[in-house]
Amino acid sequence: MAFLNEVDMTASDVIIEIPKLSFADRVAILVSIAQSLREPVTERSERLGTADRLRGLLKPALDLPSDWDWKKAKEEYLAEKYLR
Image (tube, rainbow, N blue to C red; front, side, top):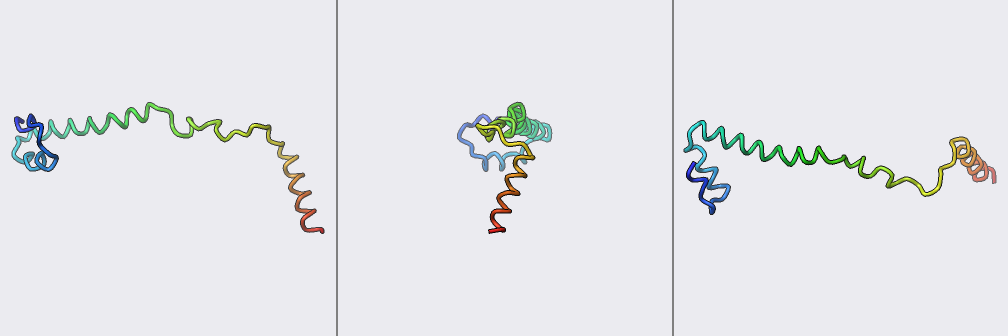
């Protein structure tokens, strides 16, 4: 895998060189790539989810009325709206 020591290689250069490698070297590269892709996923999963981070963000400053008060207010609004 001496060609991987060349710093100026682009991804397309590496792709061209891979078929020239032995099977063991290709497997080693594949494992290395898989591990490098798995690391960011692991880091993200360790962080809190979006919902957990946003918990409480939409919480109102005042207490919400109970269900009964809300239903009563809606009923009064609709009665006023349609019975005029």
